[in-house]
Length: 436
Ligand code: SDX
Image 1 (spheres, helix red, strand yellow):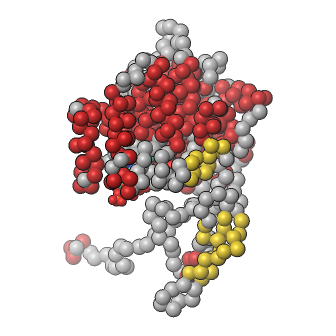
Image 2 (tube, helix red, strand yellow; image 1 turned 180 degrees about the horizontal axis):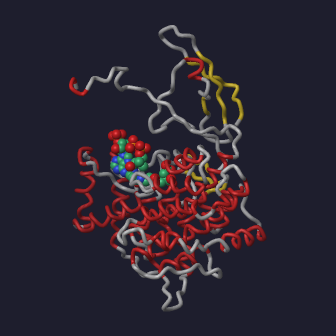
Image 3 (tube, protein in one colour; image 1 turned 30 degrees about the vertical axis):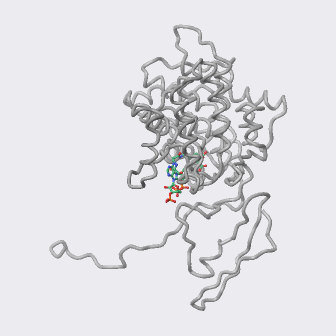
């Protein structure tokens, strides 16, 4: 980051001395006012719940222009990466800063492939869960549990440890997600198959059984690989910020990623794809497209607490570019499966059309986000609704790790420790029980 020739001056109407604050700019996006010395100079904090105007770090990984609806991973537009690369090449890009050449790509694919198995003890860890446990509850436990198996890669300050932990997490997430699924459906786990692609191997571990050979559909394999790319990273979102804050204590990478999995589960974040599909199914049960008007009235009535899941975004005040690509993927997958008339897809498109023409949404700049169509395509592929967020976590693991590694490598990083505006009771004495 570069010191701007612009400066910020903070003055106070009560005559307190004004403070001059440096302004920095990056390569793209808003400049920042550096307030690190504000408390020391004024005895005051800034106040920004939800971090609406706060840059918690500098980063060179992902850039979002919310007004234009642009998303770049290391400078490359998501539209080009999603159509010209595969997920592991994008992982290489996010982790190392550059797309791999042919040899680097082959080596990276091989390295990940050779780490896809998990310790056999993991199966016994699974047995502690109820069969009807939510997959995200299982995954949060399994990912955290990885730190119990890989002591040789838990020192977050050791670059080699971070490197092998990154590969292990990227490689093992598909195995863990498919194990969570197989555990729920009571089928035997499928071991990874090294001659399959990353997405193909995941599909076989999910949908294959020991009773017969599983043939990977190239169209579905490509669609899933694209879904992974679209979810790979997204700047300083809630779960990434969770991973950064968690890792800033020096805990091991597996524990920090487990914290990210837990945060992503929320319906306002990665859990929105599951919530969105459930919303579409509810409207379908109510009467489908004919009932969209009634549903939209509920959404616009704040007291209902009903939100149009898969719509709106803290940063995008235009169409989420991932939603456009996800809709295209939806078209391809549904056509491949002969489901062009899928009622939920038709309902989603009708909802989107109505919302984009409705003042309530237009005024608030609410557009479809990545979660609006992802559930429909995952459901068509055969992924159960309550596993959608698990797929999101699988794909986002590389982004979390890249952001964690960037933070640990940043000489400015310290343990994160936000402050507060205290509005509670002032100091008082404890009264004896008889007097309370
Ligand atoms: C992800 O941050 C990331 O990058 C996340 C993510 C990633 O890749 O990591 O992109 C993934 O989490 C996508 C978002 C998935 N969540 C949903 O689809 C859930 C539905 N969306 C909303 O909950 C909401 O839009 C958020 C949480 C996504 C954003 O919330 P903000 O930025 O805090 O915005 P807000 O709640 O202040 O909304 C502004 C206004 C409010 O109305 P007013 O008070 O101004 O009258 O818009 C309304 C909100 O009530 N609003 C919605 C709405 N989203 C916002 N009204 C109806 N339906 C919605 N979906």
